[in-house]
Length: 316
Image (cartoon, rainbow, N blue to C red):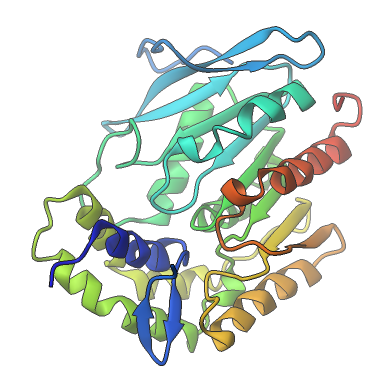
């Protein structure tokens, strides 16, 4: 029997962002703005939001930036001074944040940036396996071309947690704070957990390889290639003590059907939060892994609190 798009999505997300799946008796089952300096012209406005304090509409403009020969879509809602960057979960385009961006811009007055990672949304496809170093390079290159090099509040969901951890370790001076929303954390990817994830998705990956031309199959294959080695390396990444962070974990976790894996997910978040006094652990009660779409109010509250703590003069 051929796989449905829904099944493909579940399998892709367990590898890339560990989302929307249950593990039952060893089987995988689905639970029911600055101007661009790149030389590329900005596209027309794609969304609008209310400017903080004045009620006027602020347009989010699309900037196509180039990094190593491929183009990436960055959506910029211009604000004043500080920057908030929203990074989507695995398999998600920047549209994941569409309900949060206008409210966040109105509440903080900051420049708010979302973007499409390579192969998603309006960004170019990059052949080969998904590599976190490439994803970090894309994000940094895009922000640099937009004139953003410091004072960034980074908000990362799911797979984007890997990008956030690598970026924070590589360039802590860029970040003023972060909110990790049910995000992949190094503490979760132990030598015991990685083989469980690989085994749980092997059948779906093999099926995808029979038709690699489909976009959803391409994403799945790219993420699966080198997964074990990449996540053994991720397990060794260290978040810098200089960057404050709120760690939000969903109550149900991505593993609602597997108590063992769910507890490991919770324990990883708690362990991460305990490692420095400027880290806060928040449990999103009643939510699945899809916290940004199920409870955008909780995510918005956490971002506003982090932003206000780092920019008390700017918060409204």
